[in-house]
Length: 278
Image 1: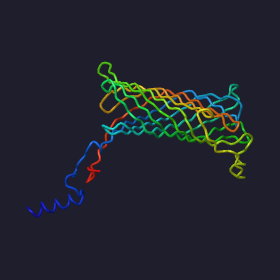
Image 2: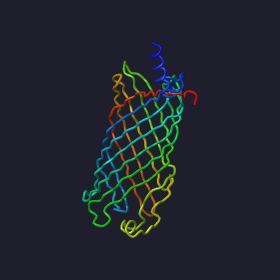
Image 3: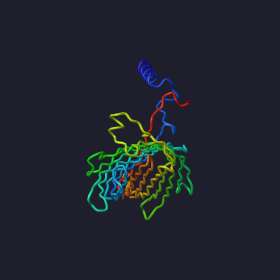
Image 4: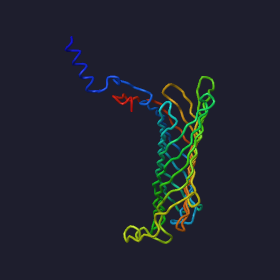
């Protein structure tokens, strides 16, 4: 019997060198994740004077995935949001068409305040935003496409309120982010992509931006209805308004989306071995 006990003890010490930390899961090793996946449909408006002086409008689709990671008792959380958009738009005379597609990544940190017995939640912080996309004009023979790439720093804030109607818990949430500073790629007025990439003629194509030269804001309004322990329905609205006036060229892409999707909340606990004092 002593031999068996000694063997078991040796195996445990090999896995966790400090016996006071065996199989210990603390609040520091518990991560709560709130994840939502949504589909959206709605109007898109596009202007890009490199391709055309006309305004284009039409219908677009979006996929939006948001994840928030936080630890109980901590004031800061990490937010990751993915937004993929594709739109088909036409000019006012309905003679020419453009196709627009973009991917937006938002990665940030938010400080949280809980009020009114945790019914009201306020968050403030900032996110880094990467935008990559393309606008393609089907009528242009020369320079038919315009690449879109930007890196922005955006202050961000959210307000959430929990309430209950009958037996169903609800949560209303508003999220707002605005462009502060960044950089973006843009050809100069009259410059072709052949000159940029084949001839290597750089002409101020990486441009610093501010909220004056490239005003941008993004707002998302959602309502969660918890229908069961595992299923929460989310509906909402997303407005993403991106614009720029650099290198004597103007561009804007405005999207309005009605959203529907599901939200899940789950926890991941990681056992720590000998790290409880670190």
